[in-house]
Length: 81
Length: 143
Image (cartoon, rainbow over all chains, first blue to last red; front, side, top):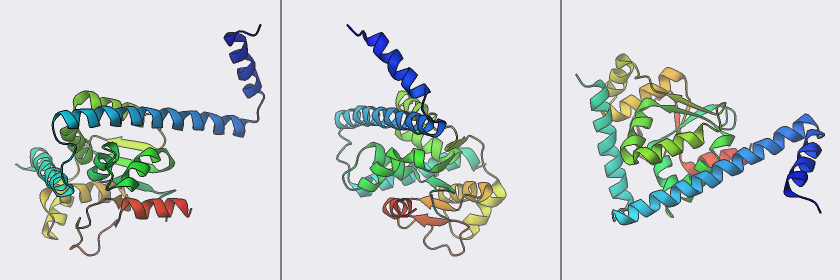
């Protein structure tokens, strides 16, 4: 009976025989998939926090106003003498 | 010049609406998902704004994800030059917007993607263009 390890080895061997361009394309797809999965998880975590802080339903205007306030505060901290 | 092969910067609002999966800004969500297809420059001003919007573990995780694209995402912690900031302030920018504009000019970044339609709208002859997330995606699709 085929074990998982032997199947992984078989797939890895098959990939190693692909042309370089195909291998690179495959690896890029893995990176993209991993990134998107991580981003989705992070978004979910941040949305949960925002719900707990009653901030997820902030209006667009409120968000822009907060972003503007932060922008000025950061720039003042870095550049105002 | 298209966003598929030139360096761009995302305004902070793109990251925030994207990561919140804000239903009002689906293009921000898609753009953030497809960041690996672009060349994105993240200057200090934007990094620090993100730090102010996110918890330390959240910002750490976001940048860990960005590090999966070392050739596509460039992070710069350096402050920008005061002379350039003052130039944009003289043109009518607030200090914060002037800092963002100065970072972009200093690095030769020619596209800022922002959902703030008023961002520097009153300034003529900017050294970069301002695109919405939807317009940026359209440019990416048509490449």
